[in-house]
Image (cartoon, rainbow, N blue to C red; front, side, top):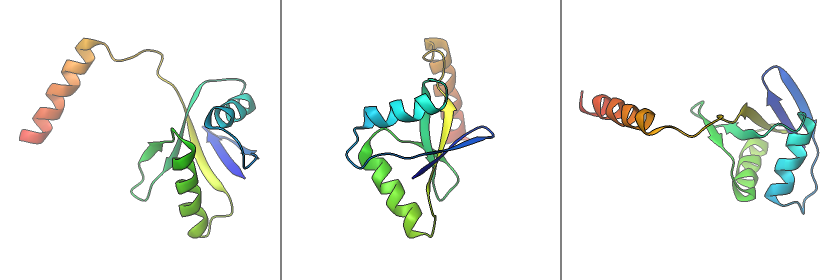
Length: 102
């Protein structure tokens, strides 16, 4: 059982054990009105990690259930509407270098 959180909207999604990652995505997306969303989990440091394979979902599920969770908790976020422009990339690269060298 998956507990999927999209903002304040939390829904339970039950999946079959023999599902593909694409089927998993479609199942989750259909529960939230067909939106294309990023599927993530929250790691031990509080970072949101994108789940991009069934292997990572299984690892996440095993970790959460081993720590006493009753369901696997996933967090859904809107996908960005466009890819970073070259200007944005240069800014981010410059900003990162400033952080590293300061």
